[in-house]
Length: 394
Image 1: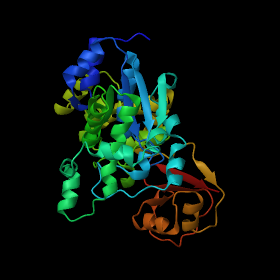
Image 2: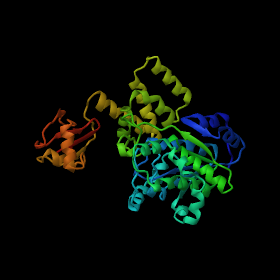
Image 3: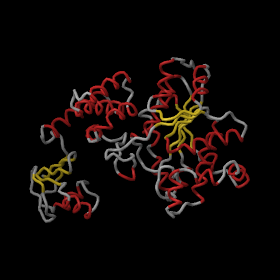
Image 4: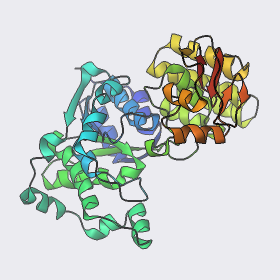
């Protein structure tokens, strides 16, 4: 396979959406050498969906694929059981094996929305981690001190606050680092919260007499509510979200995230991104108009251009013109209580959630906000939950 040494693409790989590179000079030399590099990313299946935050490093992997390098996507079916607390303010519970297996089912399919499946090698780290015993783990652990682990910002904060830090959590960096040893990684991609784990790969590779991997650390992406995008907070934009929902979620992000999303979550040329940034700074354009372009670009990335255009039409019709969408699911639930209708139509998962939605004034019937759980829904009623969800009752 021919390896591209395109200077512009190499520069973009090490700068676009990148917070830190270790070792930048060495990595550039490797990229200019013409040698095919082994580029690694690991994702733990701790939730069933890959969201835009997790997709940022996948886009970086695709950039490496486009240059001709070998990309290895490691599914952390073993590490997910232990749990990484790099980005957590409390101990992450051990996941049951059944949960991990369930979450695994669509992971590769989701990743293939971004990566070229024909040029992708997928490995499961249970392949080597499940074989390790104390004879191997002991010497690996000896490469690190407790002080190094405890100096990590969120671990130190928890410890100083008297929160529990389990010995299990100390094992996670060893596991992620050993992944790099087993595939002989030249480059590993990760977020800034993963810094210690990524460096653990370099340490263990040196211990096993391998050349230490270079590291590209990307910035963490904030979710629709301005906090770090996380499945546990429910503020994610998932790459399997249907086009209208994905478009609507992007339109709900704070305006100060528009340029960050363009840079990290799309591959629109940076020249165009900078032009949008200038427009926003000069207040020449309504941020909503640029956000519409962003939403289309993101939907196009994971679906298609035609579906992005349809999603835009839907958004304009429903949210700007306040029209009821043409195509909504019809349920034969006339005569039933609103609580039952919300549950049977899957607008709510339980009676308590249905009541909460009504109390929060999140439910409309025929464009009128309701405040009672006792309403009986009549035929030809249109029920709306929040801004994006509609059903019709017959």
